[in-house]
Image (cartoon, rainbow, N blue to C red; front, side, top):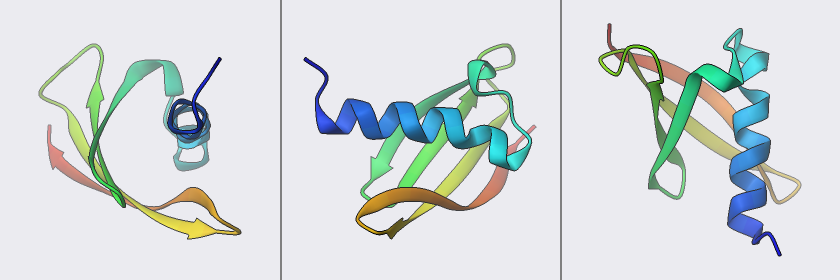
Length: 69
């Protein structure tokens, strides 16, 4: 059975396309409850910092920041 955290991560992963990113090219690493480190699967030096917000008790991407290229 899939946990709620795993389900939320899958939803966040797939919604990367809302920011023009290919969800299959990125790995997510939770930093804290409202932030994730996104690491490119091809170039591990390409990293983003993703901020979340909760709408209707569901996590959504609020903004992304480039950490390194």
